[in-house]
View 1 (tube, rainbow, N blue to C red):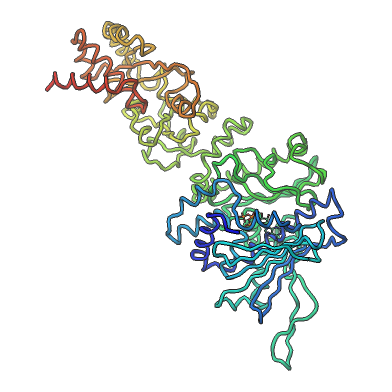
View 2 (view 1 turned 180 degrees about the horizontal axis):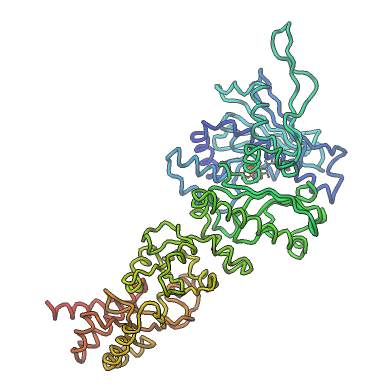
Length: 624
Ligand SMILES: Nc1ncnc2c1ncn2[C@@H]1O[C@H](COP(=O)(O)OP(=O)(O)OP(=O)(O)O)[C@@H](O)[C@H]1O
C-alpha cells in the first residue's frame, strides 16, 4: 500500500533536516508505547478481559548486534489490521496539507516547523532503512496479529500474522552508519535523558562484563532504566528542569522546550494535581477549530483522555500538560465532564494558575513574555469575552501597539498607557483598523497626535470583537476614536470649545447643503475638531457596529444592517473653505468626493468607484 503524499513529504524532510537530532526516535517510540499502555489501562476499566491476565504494563528496549536491529516492545493496547493501515501510513491531523504547503525547503526553518508538527512514529526512519511493526490488539485472537513493514520510500506492506502476546513490537533495521545505537550504554543513556518521566518501567536486559570473552554479555534479567513513577506526583524538589522539559515534550509532542510551567497539588474541597505548560511556539493548527487542544486528564494516575478541553476555557487552549484528579470517577466521559462540579472547580483553579504564571512571567521575564504575547496574545484576547470574571487580570496581561512608538510591536501595557496619560485625561483611546498601517494613518488620530495624546493601535481580527466586551479598565472608559460623539473634553480647553461652537454655527449653511446632497448616503453631517490634515472623515455612533466589523461580518457571509456613517468635516481645511463657494453639480461632486475619500481613508469599499473617479477627474480638470 502507498503512503499518503504528506507522509512521503514528511519522511523526506525529516530524514534530511532532523539528522543532527536523530536520537529523538527513541523518545518518540517510547512515548507512543507509553500512550498505548495508558489506553489499554483505560479501556480495561470497563473491560478487564482485555488485560488477558497480564496487568503489568511495561516497555522493553533491546538490541541485536548481529542483526543490527533495535526493538521497542510494549504490552499496551496494540493495533488491529485496520488501525495499522490507518495510523502508520497517513497523517490524520486536520490542516496537514496546508501545513506542508508552508514548508520552504530551507532545512533549518523546516526542521523547526516539523518540530512543531510532531514527527512521532515516522522518526524511526531517521536511523532505520527498514522498520517492522508487529502488533496484536488487546482482546483479539492470537492469529489476528498484524505485521507492517516499510523501507520508508513511499509504500508499506501489511500482512496477518500469529502473535502470542498482545501489544506492539517495533523493530528498526539500522542504516549503515548508525552502529553507535547498538549498545546498552548508549540506549540506556538516551532513555534516562528523554524517558525518565514515563510512568511505566522501561526495561533493558542487564549486561555484565565477561572477562573470558572480554566484552559485555547480556544476562537473563531485565531491569528498569527509568524511575517509572508519574512525574507529576513526585515532589517538586525532586524534579529537575530537564525532567520537566522532557515530560513536556512527551505530553505536547512538541520539539522545543516550554516557555514556563506551573506544578501544584491542590487539596481541599476538590483534590487534584496540575502540571501545566506554556509552549514557546504556537502549534500549526492553533486556529483550526478541529485542531488539538486541552490537557491530558488522569484520574488517580490512570490516563483517561487526551485533549480534555473542558478542563480549560478555549482562550487558554495553548496550555499543555496534565491534570490528575482524585475525585472524578474512573469511568468519566466527556459528557460527564461537562456537567461535573469537580471539573468546574478544577477549571477555575487551573485558570487562576495559568494567569498567575503569565503575570509572573510578564513581571520577571519580560523577554519570555514578549515571546508568549507574539505567539498567543490573540488567543488570550478572546478571554475578554469568554471569561468576564477574570477580565481585569487578562486586561493587565494585554500588550498593544500605540502611537507612543508608532511601531507594530505590541509592547504597551495598559499600565504604561495610564502612566503617560495627560493631565485631565480620564479615558483610554484606541482605534481599530484592518491593518497596522491603516490604524496608524487613520485620520481619526490627527487631533490626538496634535495634542500628544496616546492612542492604542489595534489591527488584529479579534480586536473589534474584544473591544465590544472590554469597555473599562481601572475605572477608565475605553473609547474608540473613530466613533462619533467624541466629547473631546480633554482635547479642547474652554476657549477652544467656544471657538468650536462659533465655527459650527458659521458652517451651518454648508452642513445643511451637504446633508441635502448626501441624504441617502449619510446619517448626519457635523463639524469636527478632531481633524488636522484631512478635510473629512466618517464616524459611527458609540453603540453602532463599526465599518471595520461590518466588513468582517460581510466577508463571513453574514447579513448586515444597512450602513450609514456620519460625515464629519474639518472647518480649518482649505478644501472645505473652497467648496462653500461651489454651486449645483460642482457642489454635488465635491460632496460625494468628500464622502468617498473619507470612506477610502478608513479602509472601506466605496459603493460606486467609477463615479468617484469620474467626479474626481472633473474636479481636477477644473483646477488644472
Ligand atoms: N506502540 C504503539 N501501540 C499502539 N499504537 C501505536 C503505537 N505507536 C503508534 N501507534 C498508533 O499510531 C498512531 C500514529 O503515531 P504517531 O507517533 O505518528 O503520531 P501520534 O503519536 O498520534 O502524534 P504525533 O504526531 O503528535 O506524535 C498513534 O496515534 C497510535 O494510534
